[in-house]
Length: 490
Image 1 (cartoon, rainbow, N blue to C red):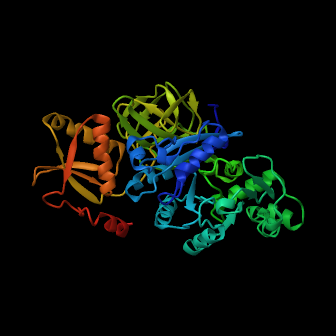
Image 2: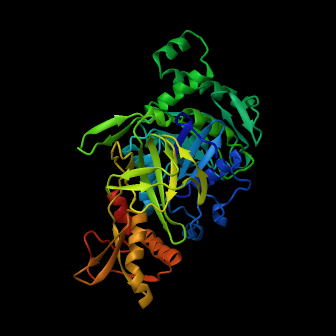
Image 3: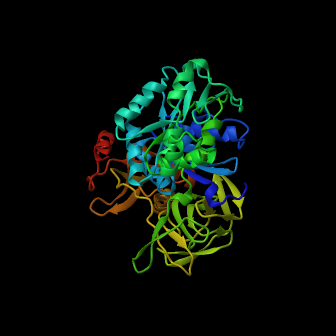
């Protein structure tokens, strides 16, 4: 993989309701960019970002997976997040290090409960939004109805379509790029004339005026009838997305290999905020908050937003670089642990695949193995310039079970296994309940806890069983009431 500098990096978290097609859309981007030669399918367990055994068994995403996509001179760091609400911690982790929240909605279903919840999580991180209306090739797909549902639910937002569908359902065959006023049909990457039946709609929705609103000089130039350059339009759109004046809307079909996603990636590369567009805030050892540019020349500062535990690979630590350049072999200071950590070989993760890189510039996302003390939420920084950043925020557990080992051999390994699983997922907690002599595992719901138990068996060969606790602990909820209680809390 090539080396990318800060201004050419785009960090995009895909969020939305379960089954809106996030994973298939990422698969489509990977295929279109040439990163993979064959498109995988969720139902077959062959996609790049759903690689965990439990994800394959359930046919849903359970954790955030990265998929860096090289597109022209840009690198799009796509983060595929779960849509099922039990795994909200994974969504929050991705949003903490993203620069844009791309909400994926089903063209037939429109805005759903998960759409609203994840949109709110992105708002908590003050992230700019974009929307991808997916599955235009499915039965009952309707672009206008999906747009109406967006405007009804998020009535304070101004939605700005940048692409229009050509046809719908079985007749969906391409998109119109509203900036270029060109049609892209099938997998043909050469634009053609807009279909006659869409010509009036395209002229009505032409988006250059919106781009001009970003800057007084641009709006004056536009009002004087002078043409805006492609660079001026691109910069103007990125500004209005960054400040939230408009929410860009794209359309397509992530699973359809015959309809190009080129236009969407072109537009994302140009309108998604760059890491340079938003400075980062870090705290000095004496508690003073300071603001720095996301730049190679800023003090070296990285934030760990995710860790995974694997019995073969060991601990895999995901981080984003906010300041400085991080090289393989560097030694950084862990502020929480008050110890130095040596970064051996740096990787860029594409699903489970580790792609070796020599260095990562400010704004980029990477991974490293076998850090001894590092945990999610830790800041690794220059020993000469100690700084600490705020990590992802995680909700408190809502559901509890009592956990028991099935054999004596499992008893010896249960505590260490639960600890490793909880380090990987901060929305899981475990403790010994003295009054009942039970081991209590707490999570966000039944599916969440069940997945943790199955991972203990699959990864660490520890067989555990669960029961309802003898005495409810704190805000323990019953198996039947977990889902309802969770939605009330949210």
